[in-house]
Image (cartoon, rainbow, N blue to C red; front, side, top):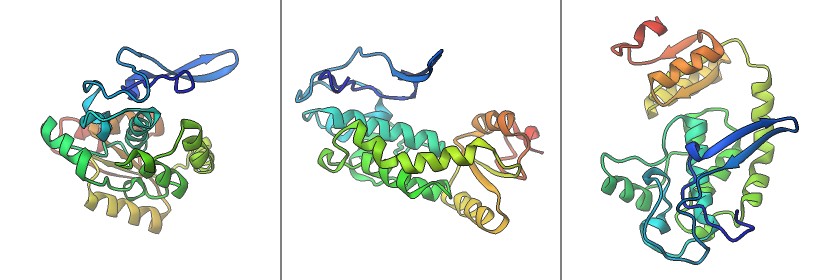
Length: 219
């Protein structure tokens, strides 16, 4: 899309599809309903949590605007939480414009440094500080992604699972990973944790809110 002179403006998980065919898997980006040309300053459009600072400021957009949204998507995929939050749109926008997100490695101990650095660069407020292209971003984190694939190809048997991660819970998880050799996993909420349980089976240790209606699954 970028090579064709198109800025998508609404990159997010629900617009990214994985197609499996005879030649393997292909990642496809869909829904170009709000796309525009590079260099345009347009009316704000897109999904609030994935909007780049320049979209909120009605500044000129280019391919680096989509790279910001890709950074938000990667952050969410790897940590289970959003990099920027707010109780309403005004607070969310203020967070995007002024706050620095918690580094992914602080929430997911063991995440390769290359991937952590690439995501944080994608989330630079200034587009000039981001990667210049999607190819450049992929090349920057390729080594780290290879490490992730090697870790997930044969999953270890013992996990530590944390739902609704916080700084305190992340510290506990990091200690468990370091001291007991457990594999740390996080989920944004208990429903996400239950989905993980279907994939990995019962974890060695789960840190969750046992007042939840789903708590029996973790007892």
